[in-house]
Length: 188
Image (cartoon, rainbow, N blue to C red):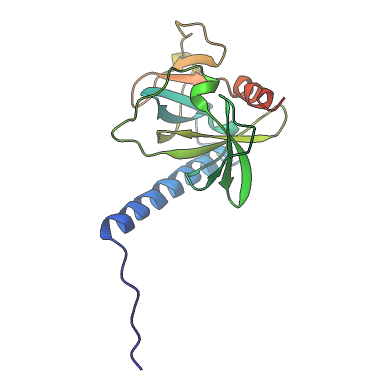
Protein backbone atom coordinates (compact mmCIF):
# COMPACT_ATOMS: atom_id res chain seq x y z
CA UNK A 1 0.00 0.00 0.00
CA UNK A 2 1.36 3.40 -0.97
CA UNK A 3 1.00 6.23 1.48
CA UNK A 4 0.87 9.75 0.24
CA UNK A 5 2.21 12.55 2.33
CA UNK A 6 0.38 15.79 2.81
CA UNK A 7 1.78 18.60 0.67
CA UNK A 8 4.29 20.77 2.44
CA UNK A 9 3.15 24.21 3.42
CA UNK A 10 4.40 27.17 1.48
CA UNK A 11 8.00 28.01 2.37
CA UNK A 12 7.10 31.64 3.08
CA UNK A 13 4.42 30.62 5.58
CA UNK A 14 6.72 28.23 7.44
CA UNK A 15 9.48 30.85 7.47
CA UNK A 16 7.03 33.49 8.74
CA UNK A 17 5.77 31.07 11.39
CA UNK A 18 9.33 30.33 12.53
CA UNK A 19 10.08 34.07 12.80
CA UNK A 20 6.85 34.65 14.77
CA UNK A 21 7.69 31.79 17.14
CA UNK A 22 11.22 33.13 17.67
CA UNK A 23 9.95 36.65 18.37
CA UNK A 24 7.34 35.30 20.80
CA UNK A 25 9.97 33.21 22.57
CA UNK A 26 12.31 36.22 22.75
CA UNK A 27 9.65 38.46 24.31
CA UNK A 28 8.61 35.74 26.77
CA UNK A 29 12.26 35.24 27.71
CA UNK A 30 12.84 38.95 28.19
CA UNK A 31 9.79 39.29 30.40
CA UNK A 32 10.79 36.28 32.50
CA UNK A 33 14.37 37.51 32.94
CA UNK A 34 13.32 41.02 33.86
CA UNK A 35 10.72 39.78 36.37
CA UNK A 36 12.85 37.11 38.04
CA UNK A 37 14.07 37.65 41.57
CA UNK A 38 17.66 36.91 40.57
CA UNK A 39 18.40 40.10 38.65
CA UNK A 40 20.89 41.56 41.09
CA UNK A 41 23.42 42.15 38.29
CA UNK A 42 20.95 44.39 36.46
CA UNK A 43 20.72 48.13 37.21
CA UNK A 44 17.68 49.30 39.17
CA UNK A 45 15.87 50.71 36.13
CA UNK A 46 12.30 49.84 35.22
CA UNK A 47 11.82 47.34 32.39
CA UNK A 48 9.58 48.57 29.60
CA UNK A 49 7.90 46.80 26.69
CA UNK A 50 8.43 49.01 23.61
CA UNK A 51 5.98 48.83 20.71
CA UNK A 52 4.52 50.85 17.86
CA UNK A 53 0.86 51.46 17.19
CA UNK A 54 -0.81 53.89 14.78
CA UNK A 55 2.70 55.05 13.74
CA UNK A 56 3.42 56.15 17.33
CA UNK A 57 6.17 54.68 19.49
CA UNK A 58 4.88 53.63 22.92
CA UNK A 59 5.98 51.73 26.01
CA UNK A 60 4.37 49.97 28.96
CA UNK A 61 6.03 48.88 32.19
CA UNK A 62 6.90 45.19 31.81
CA UNK A 63 5.47 44.47 35.26
CA UNK A 64 1.98 45.04 33.79
CA UNK A 65 2.47 42.64 30.86
CA UNK A 66 0.97 39.19 31.34
CA UNK A 67 1.71 37.97 27.78
CA UNK A 68 2.70 38.97 24.28
CA UNK A 69 1.31 36.62 21.66
CA UNK A 70 0.44 36.33 18.01
CA UNK A 71 -3.07 37.49 17.24
CA UNK A 72 -5.22 34.37 17.20
CA UNK A 73 -8.96 34.04 17.40
CA UNK A 74 -11.02 37.01 18.46
CA UNK A 75 -14.73 36.86 19.15
CA UNK A 76 -17.38 39.54 18.98
CA UNK A 77 -19.81 39.77 21.87
CA UNK A 78 -23.35 40.42 20.61
CA UNK A 79 -24.75 43.81 21.62
CA UNK A 80 -21.60 44.69 23.59
CA UNK A 81 -19.27 46.17 20.97
CA UNK A 82 -18.37 49.79 21.76
CA UNK A 83 -15.64 52.22 20.79
CA UNK A 84 -13.48 50.78 23.56
CA UNK A 85 -14.54 47.10 23.74
CA UNK A 86 -13.84 45.01 20.61
CA UNK A 87 -14.77 41.58 21.98
CA UNK A 88 -12.78 38.67 23.39
CA UNK A 89 -9.35 37.37 22.42
CA UNK A 90 -7.95 33.91 23.08
CA UNK A 91 -4.69 33.75 25.04
CA UNK A 92 -3.37 30.40 26.28
CA UNK A 93 -6.83 28.88 25.88
CA UNK A 94 -8.55 31.57 27.94
CA UNK A 95 -10.83 34.37 26.80
CA UNK A 96 -9.57 37.85 27.65
CA UNK A 97 -11.45 41.13 27.01
CA UNK A 98 -10.06 42.77 23.87
CA UNK A 99 -9.94 46.55 24.06
CA UNK A 100 -9.45 49.03 21.22
CA UNK A 101 -6.22 50.90 21.97
CA UNK A 102 -7.19 53.64 19.51
CA UNK A 103 -10.40 54.20 21.50
CA UNK A 104 -8.65 54.08 24.88
CA UNK A 105 -6.15 56.72 23.74
CA UNK A 106 -8.69 58.69 21.64
CA UNK A 107 -6.61 58.33 18.45
CA UNK A 108 -8.14 59.28 15.11
CA UNK A 109 -8.87 56.33 12.78
CA UNK A 110 -5.54 54.73 12.02
CA UNK A 111 -3.93 54.08 8.70
CA UNK A 112 -2.53 50.65 7.90
CA UNK A 113 1.21 50.42 8.35
CA UNK A 114 3.28 48.72 5.64
CA UNK A 115 5.48 46.69 8.00
CA UNK A 116 2.74 45.82 10.50
CA UNK A 117 3.31 42.65 12.54
CA UNK A 118 0.27 42.65 14.85
CA UNK A 119 0.69 41.25 18.35
CA UNK A 120 -1.76 40.61 21.13
CA UNK A 121 -0.54 42.26 24.34
CA UNK A 122 -2.25 41.00 27.50
CA UNK A 123 -2.16 43.52 30.35
CA UNK A 124 -2.76 42.71 34.01
CA UNK A 125 -4.15 45.52 36.13
CA UNK A 126 -2.23 46.15 39.34
CA UNK A 127 -5.29 47.52 41.11
CA UNK A 128 -7.92 44.88 40.29
CA UNK A 129 -5.73 42.02 39.11
CA UNK A 130 -8.02 41.67 36.08
CA UNK A 131 -6.66 41.04 32.61
CA UNK A 132 -7.47 42.72 29.32
CA UNK A 133 -5.79 42.71 25.94
CA UNK A 134 -5.07 44.96 22.98
CA UNK A 135 -3.67 44.49 19.51
CA UNK A 136 -0.64 46.61 18.62
CA UNK A 137 1.05 47.04 15.25
CA UNK A 138 4.56 45.91 16.20
CA UNK A 139 6.41 44.89 19.37
CA UNK A 140 10.07 45.93 19.49
CA UNK A 141 11.02 44.17 22.72
CA UNK A 142 11.71 44.73 26.39
CA UNK A 143 14.44 47.06 27.59
CA UNK A 144 15.41 48.84 30.78
CA UNK A 145 15.16 52.61 30.82
CA UNK A 146 16.77 55.04 33.26
CA UNK A 147 14.02 57.21 34.85
CA UNK A 148 16.42 60.16 34.87
CA UNK A 149 16.13 60.24 31.06
CA UNK A 150 12.33 60.46 31.13
CA UNK A 151 10.60 63.75 30.45
CA UNK A 152 7.08 65.02 30.94
CA UNK A 153 4.84 64.85 27.87
CA UNK A 154 4.18 68.10 26.00
CA UNK A 155 0.52 67.20 25.42
CA UNK A 156 -1.89 66.70 28.28
CA UNK A 157 -3.17 63.15 28.14
CA UNK A 158 -4.10 61.28 31.30
CA UNK A 159 -2.92 57.98 29.78
CA UNK A 160 0.63 59.18 29.04
CA UNK A 161 2.96 59.28 32.05
CA UNK A 162 6.25 60.28 30.41
CA UNK A 163 8.19 60.41 27.18
CA UNK A 164 11.02 57.85 27.36
CA UNK A 165 13.99 57.27 25.05
CA UNK A 166 13.77 54.10 23.01
CA UNK A 167 15.78 52.41 20.29
CA UNK A 168 13.20 53.50 17.70
CA UNK A 169 12.90 57.07 18.96
CA UNK A 170 11.06 58.74 21.86
CA UNK A 171 8.16 56.63 23.14
CA UNK A 172 5.05 57.52 25.11
CA UNK A 173 5.07 55.64 28.40
CA UNK A 174 1.45 54.64 28.97
CA UNK A 175 -0.19 54.70 32.40
CA UNK A 176 -1.50 51.12 32.66
CA UNK A 177 -3.53 51.79 35.80
CA UNK A 178 -5.39 54.56 33.96
CA UNK A 179 -5.85 52.37 30.85
CA UNK A 180 -7.11 49.52 33.04
CA UNK A 181 -9.68 51.81 34.69
CA UNK A 182 -10.87 52.89 31.22
CA UNK A 183 -11.04 49.23 30.14
CA UNK A 184 -13.03 48.30 33.27
CA UNK A 185 -15.35 51.28 32.68
CA UNK A 186 -16.22 49.92 29.23
CA UNK A 187 -18.15 47.10 30.92
CA UNK A 188 -20.36 49.28 33.09
